[in-house]
Image (cartoon, rainbow, N blue to C red; front, side, top):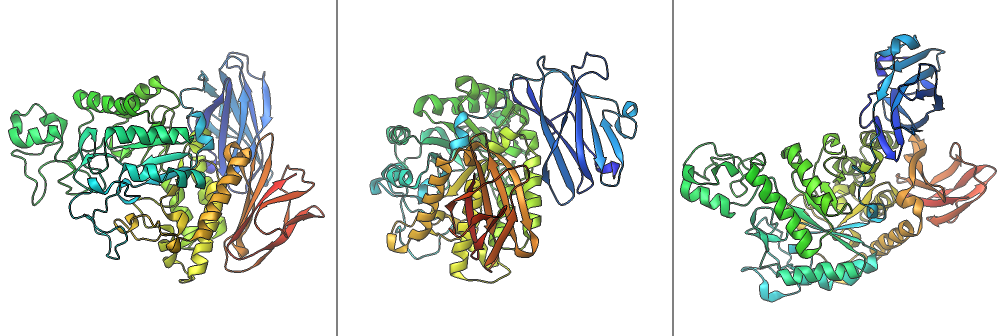
Length: 594
């Protein structure tokens, strides 16, 4: 057994609370080396040798590692514990605070001095039921042409979208389309910024306390939230606290008064007087973005201003949470303060950060409930759209991502396959190793959406994906929504609606645990299980251009007597202790395992 691969630390994500007096404990080992893992534990004040033990289950496997985990109950919220791992090569090692050793005494014990009340990091209760729909307001629907900006383009213009194009989308347009979203099955709307700004995207905020006049009025924004709530839809706003716009009052004061401005420390000014060209004399979002000066969130005045903004829109309009832009470029201390302030209003308010890489430092229960799951999105694009990775590699990446976070964080992820910052899925399909085939691209989107809507976390649909919209990187992924039904892919819409209905009607798909079922590398197929005390549901995906025969054993540890097809080819059935049938190319089956 490779001792160097064995790892545990008494901290997230290897130890975290999952309920009152209950803690989940994980340990990592080299893939394929350990067949049995036992956890010995007791009250940390009892003498060594006393206590209990449980066998940990194999919870996930990456390309390099196996992860074992189990849940321990502690009546007094304090633990002493260590692991015993048994290898296929006949070796046994102990893992404790002092390291990995053949000697139990030399390994020592890990300690968990206090199990928290388990409520600090718990996301809103409604996330398990959420199906999120992202709207870019300027491009979703034009409900009031009277508030159009100058030079607005025709909604159905064939001209290529440009970075400074305006089309006139607004709040009334979104209100008019709420029945469409309700019919689709959406119950959470995420809006990119709606506050006053000079751009079409509104990420360079001019006034954090005003609705952009080209979008509408405060009254209309309140009406949107009210009508959404009447349809049992939550509304999440986008907060841009990393940077403001260059027309923001504080930056304008610095522009005018220079070093004598009372707001000069609200920003990171390298030299005075302020210049914006050829490159800004101050820090900005990205590289040389003069219209987006970076805010100094270590300045107490800035911190207080932004906290008040966040609370204002909750109280004034009744939103249900915030998506937080460029979250990784802001101090952790600021996010801890924000969480404290927001959760003090209502623990059911959602906080999701925009982080496009590994996000563990923000998901410890003291900052965000979840993040936009770009790690998952990237591997989904590689597997389903571009088809540049195999089923085994995809599953390994999937498990690697899942094992980086706590259960509650995984449940609160925005699981997206596209957004206003990425090329759309159908366009990504053009990079496939199999070349371009319009029918197959749609089938692969359908397949990816099956995974997205049956996996743990909050599935997030980018506006228009459900009717087959295409588009490359920004700004081409921000085309006006296609409302002409003759130009919509109605079969794709029906597919999404069916999947959302299946998710809503089956609790295991919303809140059940996840477990890999099988991987067939040669056929690019895999299956997984979602299960709780009430249901066991199997999902099987064939991500290949070939028809595949299905002949797999029941999932380990699950006694199956019959299967019921919820989605997919009805030929799938239970025969002689195996799930059998035929899966067409780029297709999936969702099965209730009875």
